[in-house]
Length: 271
Image (cartoon, rainbow, N blue to C red; front, side, top):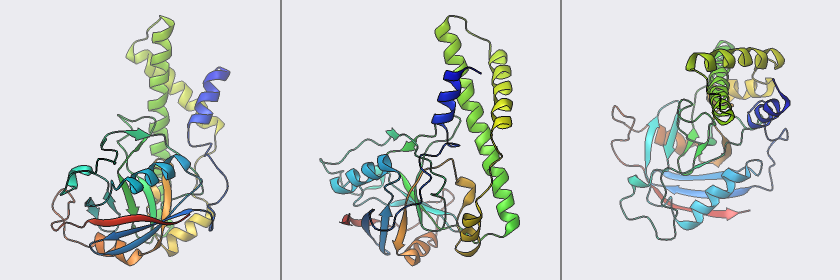
């Protein structure tokens, strides 16, 4: 494995999370979201500046006002951010793009505890870089987990990591071969990627949920299986009871609430 490939792989993937510093308590932007079922106060992490600034831009433009929580799964999460759920036109000042993405910002200290604010995204098969949706976000409700649950979650995370690394390697190998003028067959690409995947996991430790996070998942709850593959960029400061209310609404077979739950107003209340 040459040095350039190693550098790209190492610095583009989540084993080298962007920061090893825990989120601060005083310097983060605070957002007040008024919904049809109550108020939720959110803190945006400065450790994820791309997601923070993108969310602030959308809040300030009025993009989220009038948008519904279109996907709700009790004991999992509540999701919003689709402009097609608006009952009135998108403000002219808002960014009306529904499909733009932003780079992932994985941070090992920012995890899917209850109340975590994170970015939705497309799956690894079409999104090997795990880029986040520019507008869709979700708030974690989750459940309390026992040690056995956390062990199962670790295996799921490891599986997700392997698949994501493998997909990324496949694309890089295919692109490199194409640009060099010596295209490879699908089987050859798979073989090379398999060898590199083995080398990668031989050189890197197996993922384990940190002890402090295990305790949070056991006492507060969350969804650990999403860690390391979806960007967490904030958390609920006040209004977890409202998250629970939204998560408890009746939904159809597609997890869409039978009665709309809307974001009525959203604004920055402090920085």
